[in-house]
Length: 362
Image (tube, rainbow, N blue to C red; front, side, top):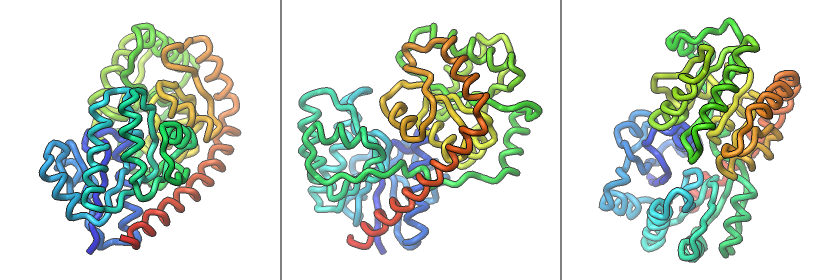
């Protein structure tokens, strides 16, 4: 019986990262149902309950080393794990996992990762040395490949798409129950907004509140969708409190599959979080992305969708113009997005083949 250890930003109830883990687990189990799957987690009980796999506490060095030692393959299944924008500590933590895996001569797979940016010189040197020892590298976008090559990675790099495109949503009946449970009306078109805390001034809250009111004044309902409740709820509610019109928010805890279903019930999504935008593209929902990170811009380019601009430079007037343009062309945009989404789903099936080929080799 083979064992796979997947590491990433799991157990923090960030629905984007949980969607990545769900997708990878699904890919493995469909072709290799007997494989024992372990995943790094901040909340082991949550990970085991949601994903039906074994959790390994990210705070237990002993358990992590033991799991790596007893695994056949170690998979980097996160988003942009290797970056030092937030801190060097996170980067060094994940690089250490790869280094330990190679010390035990384990097969290491980078699976549909984002990458970078890495800014500090020593961090670049260390990342280059360790990544060049990885057995196979599969990234989710060309920008990540470019950044990896710029620091000196010479290994062959494949570029596909985010593994989340393999995720399937709950059915319409479950979505309807969620909306009813949250007292979210469905008598008008529903516009979703997904924001996250970032290094922005108070005028970000004011701009988004004015924008939310503009949408409401058009006879549409606004629904805030936290992708990581512990962080996104606060900034969402700050915007709601400054709005003159009533808006709504998902308040309870949901799985990635459930939120994917809810996003599928929208007419348009305005989002900061990358995986909120990915969820919209999976369901063919037109979007306006708010760029807080280069990965958002790269993804919008990939799916040919609109940008509202950089978060630090948001302008209410421009946002309203972008929204009106999208609203007037939403049916055409949705049709085009469905076509792009179908192509991306074909590519993600190749990811499944890559993953299962690696499992055969170990």
